[in-house]
Amino acid sequence: MPQTRQLAAIMFTDIVGYTALMGNDEQKAFELLNKNREIQKPIIEEFNGRWIKELGDGVMASFITVSDAVNAAIKIQQTCNAEKEFLLRIGIHLGEVVFENDDVFGDGVNIAARIQAAAKPGCIYISESVYNNVSNKKDINTKFVGEENLKNVKELVRIYEVIIENNHPVMQLLSNDNSSGNPIPEKSIAVLPFVNRSSDPEQEYFSDGLSEELLNLLAKITELKVIGRTSSFSFKGKKEDLRSIAQKLGVSYILEGSVRKDRNRIRITAQLIKATDGSHLWSETYDRDLEDIFKLQDEIAVAVVEELKLKLLSVADQAASHLINTEVYNLILQGNYYAEKRDEVNLAKALDFYSQALAIDSLNARSWAAVAKCYVLQADWGWIDRNEGFKKAEIAAKKAIALDEKQADGYIVLGIIKMNQFDWDEAETDLMKALNLIPGNADLLRLIGYFYVFLGRFDEAILLTKKSIVLDPIKSITYFNYGYLLYCANQPEEAIAAYKKTLELNPQFPRTHYLLAKVYLLQGKPELALEEMSKEKENVCKIPGLSLSYHSLGRRKEADETMQDFILQYQNESPYLIAELYAFRGEKDIAFEWLEKAFIQKDTWLTWLKADPLLQTLWTDSRYQTLLKKMNLPGVA
Image (cartoon, rainbow, N blue to C red; front, side, top):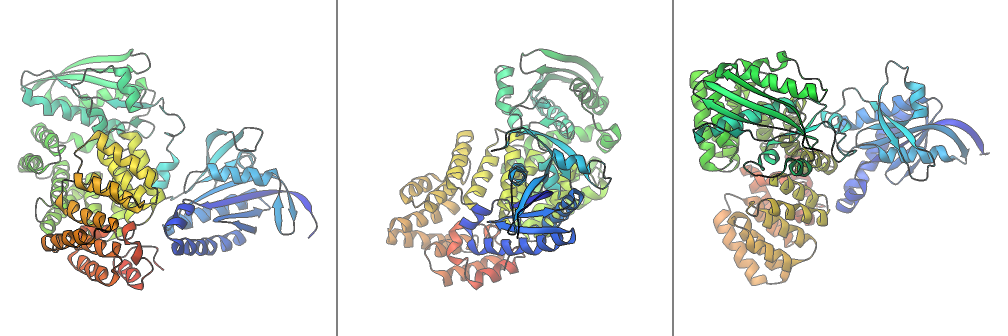
């Protein structure tokens, strides 16, 4: 074919995280390549495009018109996002290129490739030359991303993102996330716990509750980065400089104040502080009756957003919460105070307060949602009968949603229950409903990230967990989850760093030494693994962990004795962990026997099945594939 020079729209696509997947599961990686071709080739042809070549997991195509290139990219992304098996980055540039021997060369090709590399997972980035040709198309919507200094490109390139309708909620969230561009975004705030100035120290629940209510109200503003409760409340009672706190939390502004409550009268002082110089942008003192608390919360939030030049959700959007009886509101705040402590005794106390609230008003959605959360936590941690707890949680969650369809906690509880029942599609549906209601909630982002680990969707899991860390940077459980997903994604050094951060924030965090030791086992460092396993407090993890370490060290007798001890104690409670022991030892037949028992018993550890690196001796066995299918896990050959 003779060499020709012409103007063309060049499109590059790339599978996110393919290299890591290839290192973790080669067969699965090849399956995704075939799936990628099956999706892209017919769509490229449909829009009059030309499939040029594959470059590893990437695809290069050319189009005569820019509109065809962009519309093809949109359809490809929508199809991939709907399939939920992998994510693509897509970049498009319009420029002069050289066609020769069924290949394409030139700066236009290089720029398209660099734009694709800059795109966020699930997104389409285009150059300004492409934008200029589609900006007047009614069916193509875009937004400006910024000017980028691309490798081997002399001039700065202005990049735009193509907005994909009906995109997956997670992709929408990550597409709108600008946290990586500026380490401390201008539109960012932390709500510190308001100081209790009441004569009665028992009123602390009220000052904490008011702070959390304001935090949750501000978190609904999509333009504003709001730090989560755990990180903000970690500075409670500390005399640290506000500028230092803002730097640690990564925010530009801080809202602080105090509360004095005397029977039915409250005095609230609030001030908004600019972190760079400690200056007070706004302050106000309110003397009100308790019945005015909801109106007062709105007033404070409105004052803050006016100072920050943001748009607050309309009062109508918050109307459901304003229907709460003040006595009920008081009981909910007291319940929240104890529920946040997350231990067996305090969760029981919280449930009692929520039940009292329902005795006064049985049609209060917030109370039902709070009851549902208590039950699901109690069941998940084994403090009440698991099946009975989940049943009660489901009833309460559905009641909350029936009373108020905007009760995100109700959907979260349903998602957790479905997850533990291995009903992955329904679990994701419920979690996405919650995400649409509270997109800036760090705990929900962390939960969805953890959920995606079970499905083997590591790239989405990592992105969501990173965003959760940005929104709540001093929360040990987030680093704990982050360590686990990095371990499963075959990034051991990063996993070790995450677990060490967990222990730095909370030296007593359960199961951290156990999982850190598993990373060392994966690295072939059994001495370090044994050292960590010896520090673990929970026997359900420590005993099998010691057996794994002894086996890896060649101390067979100790490994066998410890394993038999674990089987005697936990065969009815944790058959999955027994299967893991046998799989690690290479005794596949016995491992599958215990996995079947785990499936029959609906062992919650079985959610790890698809992601667990210690089961890799089983991955190529047909029985493993059969079990994955029985669990309705996606992406199985």
